[in-house]
Amino acid sequence: RVLSSRSMASKTPVGFIGLGNMGTPMAKNLLRNGYPVIATDVFPESCKELQDTGAQVVDSPAEVAEKADRIITMLPSSPNVIEVYTGPNGILKKVKKGTLLIDSSTIDPAVSKEMAVAAEKMGAVFMDAPVSGGVGAASLAKLTFMVGGVEEEYHAAQELLTCMGANVVYCGQVGTGQAAKICNNMLLAIGMIGTAETMNLGIRLGLDPKLLAKILNMSSGRCWSSDTYNPVPGVMEGVPSANNYQGGFGTTLMAKDLGLAQNTATNTKTPVPLGSLAHQIYRVMCSRGYANKDFSSVFQFLREEEGQ
Image (cartoon, rainbow, N blue to C red; front, side, top):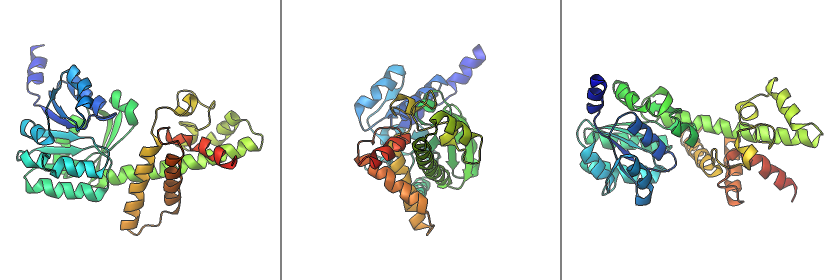
């Protein structure tokens, strides 16, 4: 007993910036593991839940950097990351030498590299560590982290990330974590659209959707969208399609990740014809009332398209 309380006492505070749907449950898991958390969010009301759980809330990222030498950021997009790190009240205004900065936002790998250079100038270390798994996995500490950065610093990052996730994978230099995440989500979108089209065609041809799914899943067409996350209502339980496409991974977020895939493809002159088309389909869905539904609602969207 004495031993465990001593190891608790030795856990130095961890900063956490960005307390949204993902950040709050992630920061809670750090608290559960005995790390004092010093947190902030641009919306003060977002901090309340974590404050009630025992975190210290401060006013700005700069203030977090004054008080903690390990900081995790979880933000919606590239401009937010740039602001939180390099803005007038940003982390790098007050960062201590040797601080470990871990960004779990999903952003353009080029921005991750810029932040790493800016951090290095201040004597700090920046790593990108985007996640897959969504809000449910964040709560259960079952996220997958894809980490990019200097390999010597990976162990220090791993210690914190294992409190919040089940899988932590080192991907290479800064930006490679983002690259892995973006590539996975591009394939996920393409696979989901393909699954939705296929199921819809089969249903039109008179096949029972459960039977069709069963056949696909024992055949070469099988994929994660067909066997784990089927988009057709009534085929599977416990997935968003069984609950009017509530929860899960929102269409807006998928459109954002496909936009990143598109940008990186353009920058590297990589042909991604299906990735581009998937991006357009999800962007159209966002403007047609699907923005806050799970991305598997592309099945419903395609059926409505034909009805017009």
